[in-house]
Image 1 (cartoon, rainbow, N blue to C red):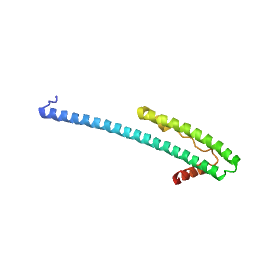
Image 2 (image 1 turned 135 degrees about the horizontal axis):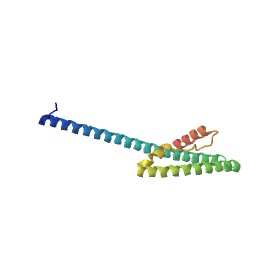
Image 3 (image 1 turned 60 degrees about the vertical axis):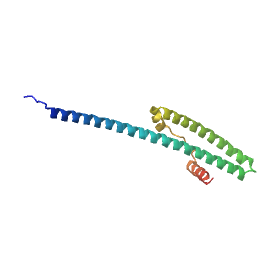
Image 4 (image 1 turned 180 degrees about the vertical axis):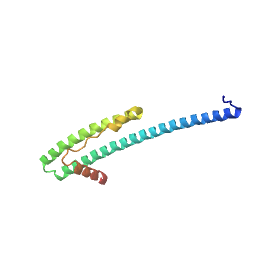
Length: 144
C-alpha cells in the first residue's frame, strides 16, 4: 500500500515545511540577536568600568592636592604622598590605556569581547587600606 498525494495534501505538506523553515530561521535570528545584545551589554559595562577607574584616579588626584594644601609646610609628608600618588596614577593610567585599546578592538572585532570579559583591573590602591582609600576617592570625586 502506498500513500498517494492529492493536490491538497501536497499543498498542506509544502505549507507545513515552509512554516517549519521560517520558524527555524526565526529561532536562529533571535539567538543571534540575543548574542549581539549580550555583546553590546558587555562592551557598555566595560566602558562604564573604565569610566569608574578614571573617576577614581581623579579622586586620587584631588586627595593628593588636598594633602599638598594641608601639609604645605611639611615637605616630607608631601614627598611621601607624591611618590605613592605617582605610582598609583602611573599604574592606573597604564591599565586604563590597555583597557581602552581592548575596548576599541572589541568594538571592531566581536571575537575580542571574550577578552573584555577576562580583563581585570587591579586595585588602584595597595592592600592595607584599599577599601577605605577607594571610598575616600569616590567621595572626593562626587563632592568635587
